[in-house]
Image 1 (cartoon, rainbow over the protein chains, first blue to last red):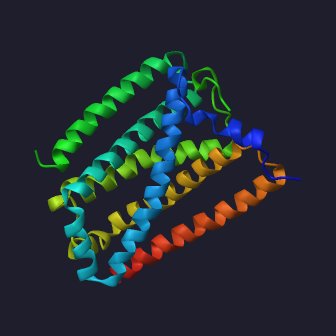
Image 2 (image 1 turned 90 degrees about the horizontal axis):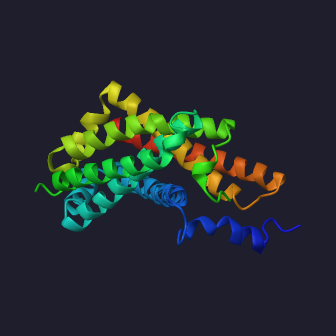
Length: 129
Length: 120
C-alpha cells in the first residue's frame, strides 16, 4: 500500500494557496508558513552555535559578519516571523480554550497590527536609527 | 484540510495541548532570549567572552535549557501537524512519531553538548 497518494498530497498542500480565501485561511497559512520558516531557522541557528565550540576567534568572526546590514535585515525578517507566528499562535491557543472564539477575525487583525508596530520599533532599534 | 479555520476549534489532543503549553512558554522564553541576546547586548550580539559569562549564570542556564526543550518540542509537533495533513496511515503515523522523538532527542542532546562545551 502506498504511504501517500497524489490526491491526498494535493489536498494537504492546498492551504498554501490563499488566493480568493477568507481571512481565516490567511491566518492558517501565515501560521504554517512562518512555522516552517522558524523550524528551518532553528536548525540553522543550532548549526551556527557550533562555532562557539571552535573558540573565540571563530565566534567573534561570525559576530562581526552578523553585524553587517545584510544580516541585520535577515534579523528583521526573523523577528517578523516570530511576531506573526507567536501572536497568531496565542489567538489559536485562546480560541482552543474557548476564549474569544466569536471575535477571532477582530483579534487576528488587531494582533497583526500589534506585530507590525512591534516590528517597526524593533527594526529601528536593530538598525540604530 | 480546514477550509475556514475560524469556523472550527482545534481538537484538544495531547499533542495539541503540548503545542499550546510549549507555545505559551516560548512567548516568554523566546522574548527573554531575544531581548537578552539581541537588544541588551552591545551591537546586537554577544562576543565569545560575553556568551560564556552569560551562560555561566545558573539562572540563565536553566532558562536557556528550558527554552531549548520548549522550542524543540514545539517545532517538531508543528512539523508533525503539517505532515499529518497528508492523511498518513496509522502505521506511518507511529513511525513518524518515533522518528520525530529521535530527532527531538538528538536536537536537545546537541544543544546541551554545545552549551556545556562552551561553559566548561
